[in-house]
Amino acid sequence: MACVVDLEAAVGFVVAHGDVVDRARLSGLRGGPEPAPELLDTVENGQLPAGGWPAVQGGEAASVEATCFRLTELDDLGALGRPAARRALDWLAARQLPDGGWEEDPALAEAAPEWARPGDPAARLYLTAYAGFWLTVAGLDARAAGPLDDRVGGAYAGVVQAAAQTLAGQLAPDGSWPSFLAAGWLSAAVLHRQRMSEPAAGIQAVLGARLPEMSPADVAWLAATLRRVGLDDQQGLLAAARRRLGETQRADGGWDSDDGHRFDVHTTLAAIRACR
Image (tube, rainbow, N blue to C red):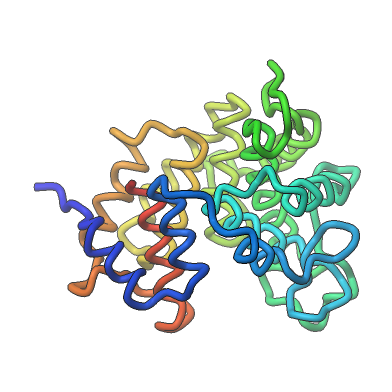
């Protein structure tokens, strides 16, 4: 029998343990009213003039990963069409390297975690998948990119197409990739929207085999990512991930984060995003 996620319990967990931004994100995921302007200003705070956000508050160099994470929050809040998000997306697009990839600013080398370290090929692939994912989402979202067009990838078509070619070029024949686990589902999402079905399916097969060993946080991120790009949620990897979330949901309605319990609300919001 399939395990079913208890969404009401998950909602209750976020309400009980989340802060005002977390609860606003929850409301956005549930189709609630637009957040107050002052709350959106708080989420957007710290954006650098060029358009990205720094990895740490007060930092002077914008971070690809930090900007992608901030876009996750703004997406939940229905704010991808606001000027801050549009500047961030344009900054990401402008930061693409000639080979179609992304890398953090060398100024972040000492502070960056291993998965975002400048000069590391695995980090480069992960950041390429992450940036490519958000430009994929934004390029097909009229709130973020204005009028849509018929190109695969929408308003950021050329940028995303180059990213997809870079990602596909790194795959082994068995669908595996020389980078961190998250690079897999982010790459699969980009390739799926680019109609590159064969490499996308290869990645999904690898992820499906690894799914039973994944942490709840990874499963939630995987499922939320694939759901966001319209993957069929009735069968295959996304359906298996949702079953896994049903198996790992705690009695209090939340899920465990990989970064300590203070981040359990973030993981739970990802699970809600995947299963709503």
